Length: 367
Image (cartoon, rainbow, N blue to C red):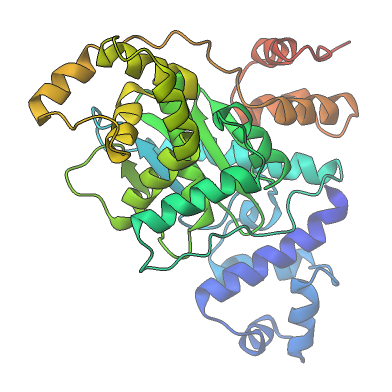
């Protein structure tokens, strides 16, 4: 990290200067430099900043020392789109958002320390504000084939996201009202999923947040996205359409649904579809309605019907991800970072960290 501190300080100066609306010529005058090229060299990490210059920069840019020197600080604004349940208040605790930032910054910085390339491409969907629901569904179905997803896409969707798209998926122990989030940084896209929710909800949240990352510039998501609201922005409706088509591709779900015993009750058949595709009863119902395989129920009948669906007993995923925990394990055992620093960033105890390593069959802290 010491070798990167000059580059880090330069990047933070550049960002803060731009945010303040100060150009390099003006900054050079404020710092007493004869030439703005010195500012350019600093921002590219080609010239170190003296302690006196750094103090001046803190005053000029109105930033604390940590802003310039802490690699685990995310300084970008509006990097999250949080997905919260409709039963809860549409609010994310500020302290949890800060915890999430430290988690993602840890993934980024520890990866850099180990020389892992995070991403070289910015994936985007080729859509516009005029794209229809049908366009989005066709794109999702195309991606199922393009990415080599199986007839049950959720089975290897996470692998594709992490290995092909370089989008880490971290399963977190989030507050009850938070289902997940998409996070978009200049150099990293990431998805958070609440590991405590039913698998059917986790899968839909994963595909929904993926859509946000792939369309962030076209349909900038709100900071808070409620799972169910009476009127959703077009981007949220498209995200739901994308998720449904990605997780339950038309050809696959039609074939599977027609293979079921027509003599069974609608609930039994929906349970089979939901379990097969790892989605909720509600998601299965609406996809089959959309494909005209079942008739839409009156709203009150639908609500009663959904209330009586089966309980999802599928095992929940382990905390974070195998890749991230292996990174934590490696930086500690190579002496690149202290156990104390890691537990501070993750806001956990040493026992929690030890248990985390054991859950992925990795070396213990002091082995």
